[in-house]
Length: 189
Image (cartoon, rainbow, N blue to C red; front, side, top):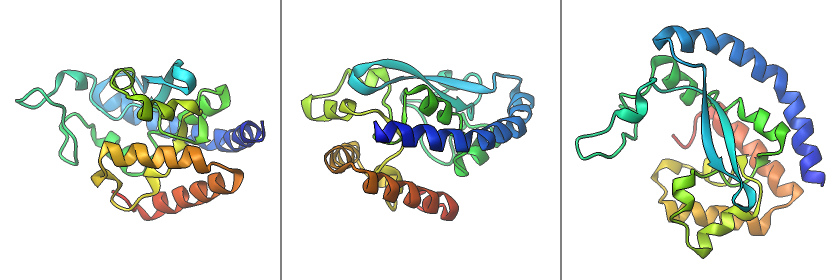
């Protein structure tokens, strides 16, 4: 109960900033390729419940159709699916700001494992499924790790399970403060 109240208070404090960021970014996103402003991402939340996660769109409208020669998707700084404004938003982590709406709705929490895609959950074993025992979050242990993009999926899951076992008011606030520091210093890229 206390965690939910904290999430709502932080979400309400963040809401004016979210609205300002959306107001600034929306025309830039639209005029770059005339597509939608938001990317409504299907995700799986607590207890396997499906929900829509809101993000500012950072990729081209036809991004799902752009794959490498072997059929895999791009991953990295040279991703041709990324728009110019999208690259900036991702680097500054502002494409994620609309997720505060998910927090206010109760789909997400400020801190918790990042919400997975439905196709990822289909591959989960019993250990990995533990990620769905709690409400997914905006930030987690993985996001505050140095060189987080070098961690394997298994290491990421281990960090999520560690959070689930250690979660507390103090742990959440440590992750929140560390997340802000990482965003301001751009560590972990």
